[in-house]
Image (tube, rainbow, N blue to C red; front, side, top):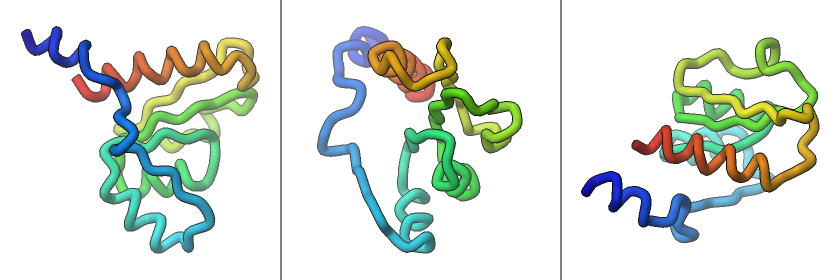
Length: 104
């Protein structure tokens, strides 16, 4: 029954998703500390999310995550098979799969 309930709910309800821009780093770090999951790309903010020990799902294209991704155990990386960020539907499917794994 638990699996049926989990699979029937929406993976990311709108009221639980926040998009923020242009915040000072201390304020952003405070917001990240309250996140259940940070979804981002190869950036400094991804490292900040890892530094405050949040679960993070990071999207990588041509850069090598073995070199550039935070090495924290709560970080998961999705690397585009084409090494580009083209084909967003493939990336979207990968994100939803990882979200299900992280929240199960």
